Image (cartoon, rainbow, N blue to C red; front, side):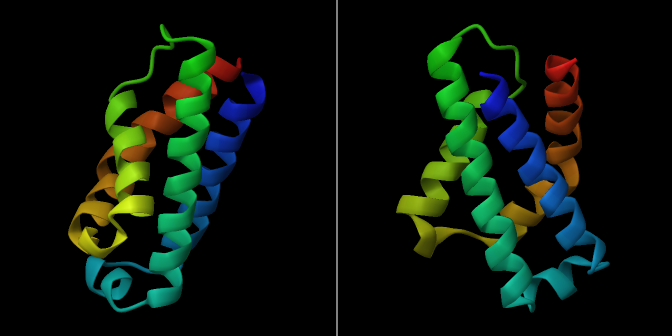
Length: 106
């Protein structure tokens, strides 16, 4: 379990590094390299969380199902992924997930 939580935290930290190189949604939208990197890390987060939930279905993570669903969308429905949705996730929801993962790792 700890390994999956550490993988999630590592991916969040990577996304934070990527985001630090851009300031706005418009910069994100036009940077294919950053978009690809962010989407890959979100996929890793979803997969690691899915595996963690298999080990402990009572794991207390806000929007856990949505995180896994996002991974599935990125992998299986990649052609329908909207940049605005991904940007919204990294700006609004990733900080909470980071705090929850850090708390679980304590």
